[in-house]
Image (tube, one colour):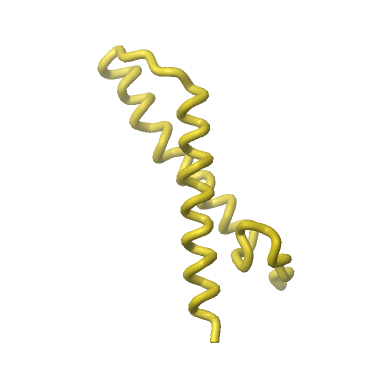
Length: 75
């Protein structure tokens, strides 16, 4: 399966969409696991909306970093 070209206006340009999905999954897990651990192990109750927002911000920044690195590596 050939990678389709990503339009330059998309924030993940030039990464393929499957890489963006993997980064999003990892970012959500990294932000969610500590909160769940605090809730289950320490009994500290925290809201879930902030965790989701933090995961989204981490995902966006990580995708932009990977996309920038890939653009700079192109000859």
